[in-house]
Image (cartoon, rainbow, N blue to C red; front, top):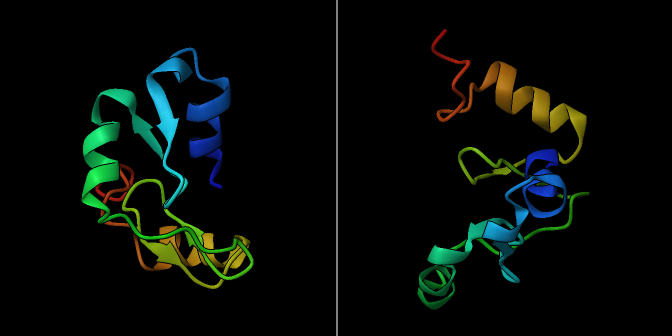
Length: 86
């Protein structure tokens, strides 16, 4: 699980506003959770040894681990990374 997802579900002062989806394992605002669960459009979670899930664009990043993160944020430039357009 990404550090952002962990933070939102466990450490954030607003953590009571989020609920983890059992399918994709991402934090979903509780007000949106029922629609999210009913739609079943989310991508099922993969083991982190296979892929990481980007919390910004919600795509699976391969390879898993640090190399995948660096590739996604530095080389491929995540489309939802606010630092990409600086």
